[in-house]
Image (cartoon, rainbow, N blue to C red; front, side, top):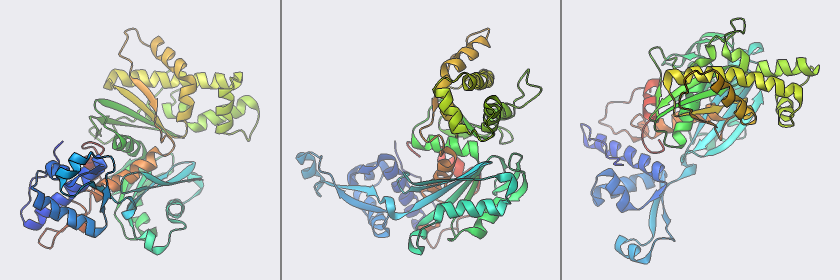
Length: 417
């Protein structure tokens, strides 16, 4: 793929374009020679060398040896065995998931790799928004000295709600939030002044998964916690729909349930409630339920089969509407799926008079961190974009604060980014 970016209106803007393209290229390929980078950027070696010098002096890129390169290639290169790579510790990005029952914090480095993951129990209905944000930020920054904290280049927050482009939570019914300026609340609590992006949890989960790998075709993502959020990627780009609510199958009404929404029937709260009723143990929790499903304890298996039936109904309807190539599960409830995958497939087949193509169904490897990880990825991508004012020159028009739609458009692009 060619990483050449069309030049802007000034020499400094052209340089900014090329710096961004170089960072994106090194992120995508991991490690490459100066000559390969110049070819990807569409620049001659001299111009590319100036960009590399600026990035190495800034501490974002470094030279490393290439012990596996053949000697004849080293001889041609002029600088034998020297490769370029991003400096992972040069910056980090924070992703926070504020959920109904827990808060998760993730840090990723400049290469997009997870540095830290922390989760704390949380009751959204008994805490204020400010308390939620304070706990989330403490999870992410606790133990960091001022010098390390200053390497943070952005914070992303994900919540199960409807989010406006300015970080305003218009409605988060499971949290009891309405018309909350979450971005500003977070800004007031952060120990460092950095960019902030607020995103719906399911969309953040989808973005994070697409950030880790190429996602061609159509992928439906379900983030299953107390509620169930959905997101759709089409050829690696987030599809929002006409009102930003595409993929939200959690609000689907399930026949025969007394007009209950799907998320009430397959969410964590429903599973724990029915498990406690079946066992008579008021302290029974979700890990205990999973353990008994794994051990084929009849009461737990019966509940799991009902969960599989409700999930299969929703997936069958979604497959008829969007025809996904694959479905990816995330969230704390996702580990239940592999235990009942065969039952889900059977229920899906029973509910169809015409056999629709069956999508691949998988559980994300970061199932319990997907939303927080995706929120961090949004800020990582922002850093490697023209919105990063660190790369702007004096004669450039000052960069605007990034809108969420712009960050998302940038995150659905090429290679790994």
